Length: 588
Image 1 (cartoon, helix red, strand yellow):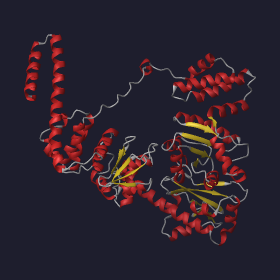
Image 2 (cartoon, one colour):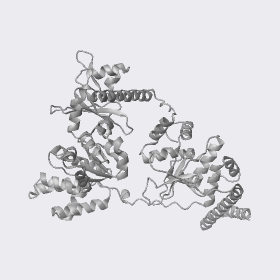
Image 3 (cartoon, one colour):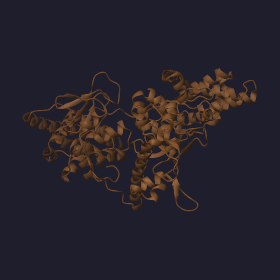
Image 4 (cartoon, one colour):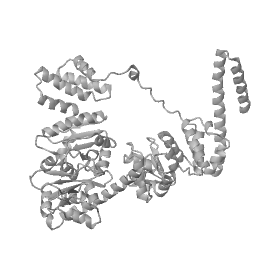
């Protein structure tokens, strides 16, 4: 079971949601008899092998084996953690989840909800200002930046008026407290007492989290005065380094393209997105963080970086390369001329130009080597050593020894340095590895095929609860040969004794093992049998499992007998022989 969420609530949620409705909001489903089918969203295929059962509230792909219930689908498709998936579906179907036992956790959750509401009110206030009497200048500015009216509405852009207390008065009229306004980062305290609006006379860019909740704001002047940008401070709901601007809108495009284009600023995101480059996010600054990288890693392992063509952007790109490679991502770079950013490039040359640059992005190796050659003198031995050292620092981030070797050889060729010297310097960067760590990890054995009789009995027990007790009177979980079926039967037996549901969608919440979940789903899509055929099949399956169990036990005893003979243990030998004969009689 997962977390502190009560079992009855998980069952309640699964009982209220419709998995067909959930999945069809992401991919088109076609009716196939009593079920629905589609091309699997988790692997590429030409023939549909992804099945969804409305009766059982489960899905199973016969191509890749991906299986689960509504929780699992959201976890896989939206890259959610289990609690996030539960919370999302609970909200959808109106189930109220309990707060955590700790009072401080409940208080934090309550505060966060208040801040989300206040931010939503602030978005509405700024949005109204933009379309009001004082918004003409701002709308003219946005149009001049190439932002069309549809994008302005989609992103809910707004305007902070010159008034020092415009937002305060509005939020007070909505019964928001000054304390919550301050905690949301929307107002600032005066030295003389009282408060004033943080954002004034600026275009407002609302910042949303992955779920579309507003968590902060970016504000830009409409002239060249400084500072150009003011951003929300860190708040209980907003941490700049844990969010990516526009990710709530682009994450599905990133997953579909299996590639994320990372830019710096909000306009660098908005203009390309508006013009058709959809798999894009903005880091909201030059410091790409580990949290942002891990967020992207849920959706793709392919990254193209396009930071501004200035020294700061160049330095940030180099720093980010190491972090991305360390996380196992494949990184490429689009270098831009000095003074150019993606926003300006698209407005000047069109989005097709930017897309072409993305398509032909440079490898991290070529980009970094070019930058370093511009910074250090190749003809100077110390400069050459510096370039090699900095290149090796990045190559060293690869866990894969083959990749390290390939890039080492490439560096040797490009810089005309003997490969042995390059390898020696790389070796200095690698930490000492114990002999135990050098041993290759044992290959995971491919699971043996499951006895069809065991699979069929699981199907029957899931379809008819009464059969669980009947079958368990003749078999115990240990009679099943496969560890996966043993686990499933044990859980079904326990839940039946406790009077709880053993429906497939609920049952799989009790398994952390992927193969157990897949087996449950797979059995549910096996062909149906008539009532008469089912009764005979149950009897035959029980008989086959018993025979197999006796055969396995006899083989095991035979091995033990040989061992006792070789050790000369007469007492144990006689006991084992007697047990062996008893088993033979039982099988006759």
